[in-house]
Image 1 (tube, helix red, strand yellow):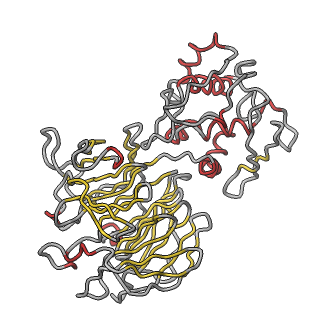
Image 2 (cartoon, one colour; image 1 turned 180 degrees about the vertical axis):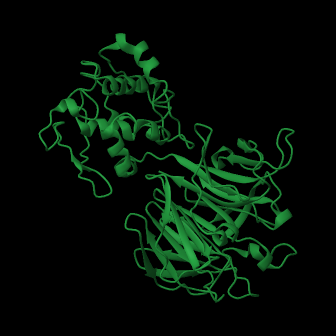
Image 3 (cartoon, rainbow, N blue to C red; image 1 turned 30 degrees about the vertical axis):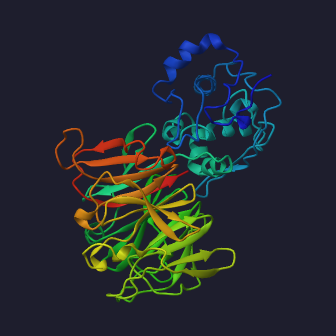
Length: 467
């Protein structure tokens, strides 16, 4: 009996599935022909939630070669009738006529199954297999044939991955005046994004960023006023994103799947806002939410336990806020939480000189990087208090928290900042991670994920996209 791809759980603790492969005599030829197209290494996500065994990649390789070279028989019988097929329906984009795939493996235009996505399998199963591969491979797969290109360009694979709870986290980074770059922690690979086709004002002005769904949103100002540029993981290009109903800057924000919420900030006249808006990345629309209890700018937002929170910030140009606010999406109401973030009173600098709170949520637990004490603190939801869990690997107090990124990346905390490493000279950005489950301050040191040379000494924007 064959193991089904749909039944695989990507964890080390499970036994390795046994799978028979017909046409095994073609293995060496398969490996040779696909070296330039698809990575054959097993994919492991940053938080270890995605594992594809080496044998499974061998099977996938056989099927891809059959698709590329029309080798008859390769891949036949790879999966038996007990494989649970996932219906995938329409594939298409940009108004082009979609390819409608039936569960039988035939298209509705009555083409034979020889034109299926992967010969020997119906397209439902083929799409299920591709969805489980690393998204780093999608650009290469798109070059195999027109059907692969249509599938990957449709964006459907990312919707299927969400259903299968398959997530890879990439880090998107902007340092100094360099173009945006993406970093894949699994492949240890940097990818430069195209330059934003904005005016010089947007390039030079302060910006804020947010990853939501398969989009990277960059907020800033152009000569004509506020602007939002959007990078699409599907099209690999920048386009303008619709403006908020009330454009703003210096707001708190966070995303949960395909939605994001922005709250507070300042309008074009410098007025501190208490309004909030929800962005739906699938619809490309902004929806006005009920107002917060207090206006605030220079604040931070995050999702925890399915609710959106805003902490820190200032209610005016001189008054600092220590309370937090919780937004319940279901009841559409805000709840004030006293003394949720007293950290803005720490240190000798005026709050207006400090960065917004550096916060990150891992496994529904809130952590903060204290700008004054260079410590990582954990929030106690029950007692509404903070405790020190670890030292930061960088000096956050040297620039009042500015130029430093503190993010959640899967099950780990991520700190990105300037500083020499391993005898390297200044002018490098170092990416470090730590899994809170590994222990507190007496536990393991921060793990160096990557060192980005000639990146300057300042992290202007950072966002982590999981899809």
